[in-house]
Image (cartoon, rainbow, N blue to C red; front, top):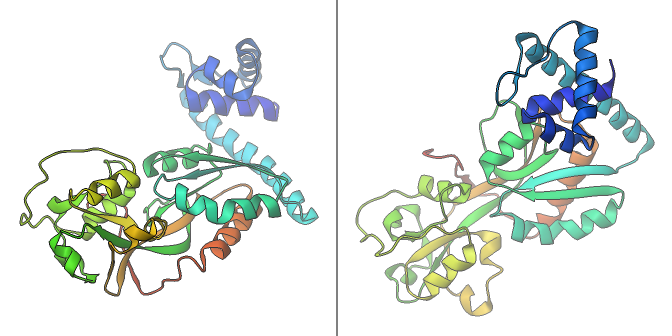
Length: 314
């Protein structure tokens, strides 16, 4: 039994396909299949049910796959321990980020991080929150940045900063006359929202109620861009809410259309998330402190009300 064979078992158990698993392991399909067959012969059991499509695990295989993950994880953890002892921060690190955070957060910390830790090969992927959760659990991502709390038992959430919601309103809209807002003033029928799947959309729906007082929009739109929502408001098509860091990046002429909420300001909590038994903990800690330092002066808010990013949460 070898670590490589166990890695092949994990790959097939994850992808349920020998060809795809071989591609992910950077070997040929016959090589991967032969090594798995050797292990099955050594153990005297079939790990995979090859009659199923997609390929399934046998009863014994389910237990073996779980144990294989533990063994491979512990081997990797030994390397982490050695790196920590040597004071070495490096290696491949895969980070997932939700789309509503990527354009504002990356410019704040990325350059400093790669300059400070040149031996880290940071691989960044953009996904919606539901995908981030699954990819973290599957071990595809080492960590992720998303709005929390997510109420996931297998994940650890390390809050980095609180980002208030801000309103964006055209001069001819009735709410433009109010310098400060309260959530009770808003009607979801009057708001332009991101498409379903964005946790920021969920946060707005959890913050505001549908009071059926505002006439519904005479059009429907599914969009994943704050820039488009801003342009629609600029053309007197309604109002929208933005994350604070998105709002302060607007042009100077648009800044007068921003509206802040009374304290405690509704806000989203942005956290660095990883599995409870995460590998590369020293890299996670390095990234966490780098981001905390980078955003401390840009988002200096503490008197906030955290709005859940989950659907139908109040």
